[in-house]
Image 1 (tube, helix red, strand yellow):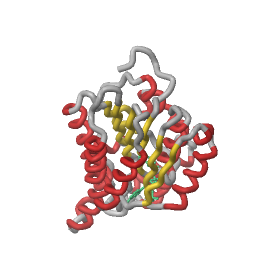
Image 2: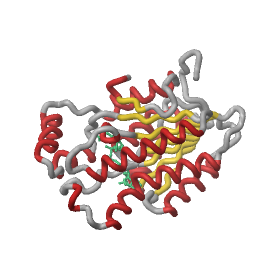
Image 3: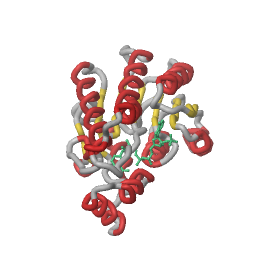
Length: 267
Ligand SMILES: NC(=O)c1ccc[n+]([C@@H]2O[C@H](COP(=O)([O-])OP(=O)(O)OC[C@H]3O[C@@H](n4cnc5c(N)ncnc54)[C@H](OP(=O)(O)O)[C@@H]3O)[C@@H](O)[C@H]2O)c1
């Protein structure tokens, strides 16, 4: 824990899953403003064009001009090959200057919210959802921690982009709530086991993204669907920038309890 607030995140290897749009893209932009020269970014998603556009944008930024290396990994994280390609790229991007490994487990999907729990009879469908939303984040985190083991002078921070749904059931969101709850517990266990690693479950609040649009248009449960439509209509959704600013504050202050669930409204 830092005695005084840091003003930057050090010379970082920063891995961001789901960086092609939404919250992950904003995290990439904001972290890029806070790292020292010599840092490297590994951006992961399936949409190559969007990732490359972000890579070009970061290259033109102040950090880019100061030598930030940005690599794109176009991969589907629901399979092991995708996870492995991220790790290989990280190993290639790492340099001895790097003093902070930051992994942002942000990629996720909402799953099929058009149905209720009692309709999920197909085990392959459920497994496929959990592969991306639970298994891949555990296996990627474990592989990154093995690739960059504890050593003096190296900080390691693992962020799980969580949700209120990790704590509270929402009707017709059985896959999403289950995935978020399981994923959060994984990172709580990690925090217990590895006291030298800083682990944060950050709940970003209702964000104006593609996922939110799916929530208000596809949710089967009429009350839940209406609550999302109302939030949108009444301008209550947050921008990714507002939420990400709170995440950056938490990271710079570095005072959170490792493994804690921190909601944007608590910051
Ligand atoms: N939006 C909200 O209101 C809200 C609220 C609470 C928590 N969250 C959480 O915040 C995080 C970001 O959400 P968001 O709203 O920004 O979502 P989003 O707009 O739907 O973006 C999701 C990101 O995940 C990537 N992704 C999805 N499936 C993937 C796969 N199979 N392999 C690799 N990447 C994949 C997507 O990229 P590609 O499609 O290019 O692969 C995209 O970059 C998620 O963890 C979400 O659960 C969101």
